[in-house]
Image 1 (spheres, one colour):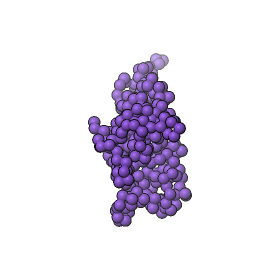
Image 2 (cartoon, helix red, strand yellow):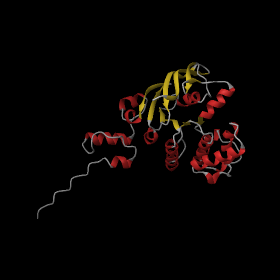
Image 3 (cartoon, rainbow, N blue to C red):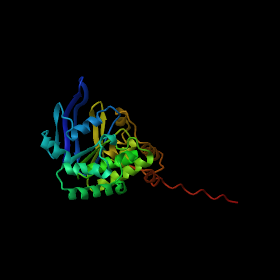
Image 4 (cartoon, rainbow, N blue to C red):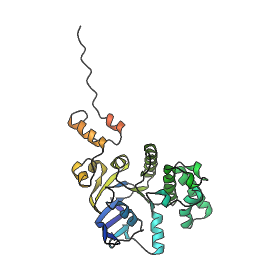
Length: 285
């Protein structure tokens, strides 16, 4: 499969020669959901800032549709229209007086008319399930609502690729589950999703592919079904398999469910694998 966005041999260090990326290479396939998985400080956020042109590598290249990134003002504008980024803290991106005004910022900067922008805003708000918040001031929103507004602002630009930095950070369980459902729906509509996280359960719930990060470089990249079951490889990234996967592997080893098959993504899928217990023998009287 051809990569729609890729990084080749990236090196980057922050002031003070603090290395953040070291000879980093990865590929992002169109229409897939990629989890960039690793502990805090592994370089995940720095990579996302490179993938939409916010940071420029000291060495290496970022390719968009096989073309090197263009860091001119016009080139960056076009790049970010195709590759949108949602930051970890929604407050860093939301600044307008109302939700609708905030979501309209990107389309207006793309040069769309007010009529086209209004249509884009309505579609984006509906996609995120927050149409009822259009006239509300952002400071009156919950953390989960702010996260959706930030994502709606990116979706309104109709990017090919949506980058999300720790999308469920700061959300409670219900808010995280709602957001995962929204992101899954965006993926089903054909949008390519790339999200950074240290939450392996989020990767299990959402990702088609996984890239394991450690110390500013890629340890491995492949299908979620393979990497999320590899305890040794995950351990090298400071992680362990999701509890659900560990239960599944143990159940297969004990003969409690059939060997093989697709990795279960939720509790219901896991329970469906278990072999029904044989009925207890009737005691003769």
